[in-house]
Length: 92
Image (cartoon, rainbow, N blue to C red; front, side, top):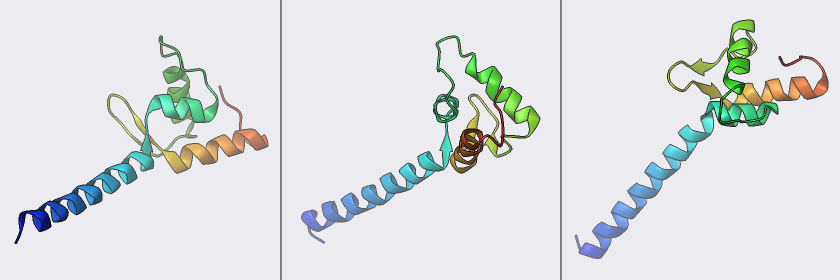
């Protein structure tokens, strides 16, 4: 195998890995991105994280990865944001 062919093969593998990482990134979002989706102000003192905790306790946000920081399911967050806009649910 020539060097050029090997480089091309490695570039294709890197492109596949990047696309997989972007998919993973899109499926789960950070608390800051979640707050922005829901219309909360993202501040340095992180007050919005308390509001997200309330939403978890109420059962409005059920799909998340616990940890530091939490990761939230993007589809569920968007559905909740749509419900809030339509007046079906209220945010704290």
